[in-house]
Image 1 (cartoon, helix red, strand yellow):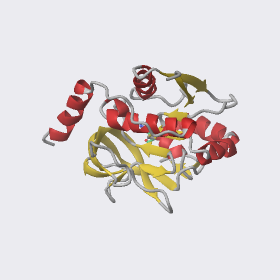
Image 2 (tube, helix red, strand yellow):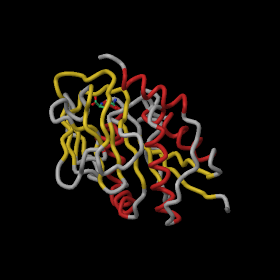
Image 3 (cartoon, rainbow, N blue to C red):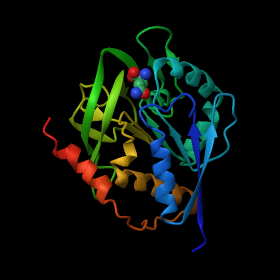
Amino acid sequence: MAKRKLKLGYLYPKLLSIYGDYGNVLILKKRCEWRNIDLTVNEINVGDDIPENDLYFVGGGQDLQQIAVSDDLQRNKSFLHDEMNKNAVFLAICGGYQLLGKYYQPHDGERLDGISLLDIYTVAGNKRFIGNVTTKLSDNIDLPLKTLVGFENHSGLTYLEGNTKPISTVITGNGNNGKDKTEGARYKNVFGTYLHGPFLSKNPHFADYLIQLALYKKYGNSEKLETLDDKEELSAHSALINKKY
Ligand code: GLN
């Protein structure tokens, strides 16, 4: 089989990449490499034009850094909507996730406009949610392993509207807002989550799900990816699932 190629646009790495979120990009690159898939990573910072990609990643960040990103994202809003409508795969973590929605209202200062790829809005709460999170995958994400795990650190409370659905339901921890038991959000192939860790390090099944969606978008085939030895990743996953909280 000819070497398959994918491109990933890494959005705002200089501003949004806290709590090791960059690790998600390394994990996607490595899991592609192990299957002889060439994943090219295009870093896109403030002021840069965005080339077309098959996947996009944006990490988390503090309120201050989110101001610059919110502003620059407006310039790229219609392009990124076009990419979403071409079924490009987006993974957004925490602060980046918030800005793919309609807006993020921090504790202090102006409301930050998002780009509404996701029909969500976020308002800073009085409490910071910090700790491990375990969740049960939503039925519309059919994977052999039905749980997700990670670490949350956010004061933003996110609420879903319209056709944007959660990616999972909270078992332990807070998730989107600590009230409605939802965690993360999905619309088309746009995925947001509050799970740091990096997220994909303990959820290899979700990493492969994203790669599979990108291959389908690019090549139209839904061939199953070769199985990898995920012993270590899955033992980290089950350690969180079995931890007594
Ligand atoms: N600044 C945002 C909040 O506190 C996002 C934090 C993050 O990305 N971890 O909710």
